[in-house]
Image (cartoon, rainbow, N blue to C red):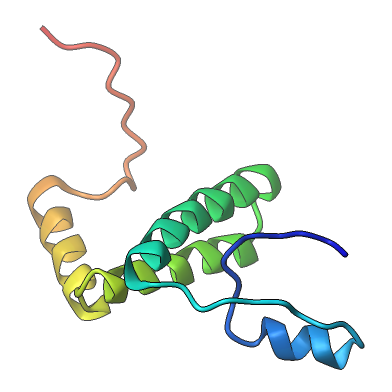
Length: 102
């Protein structure tokens, strides 16, 4: 038996069954779910940092969307806040590195 103890996507149980395995799972409380989402975000970011693959960025984004919903926000509100911050402070297109400041 292989132990995981990590949050997985909703269809993983079916995928395991289709492969002949038996998944042992539990459904998390709302508080535990948010804790596991935060851990999952760290995991996905680390995977992206290692691979630099677009698929890993997509995984991180999926977790971010789930965190928004779990915390009572909407993806639309996230986008609105992102756009407002971009308008007020700019994006990162100019590749500016702040070296120091007085």
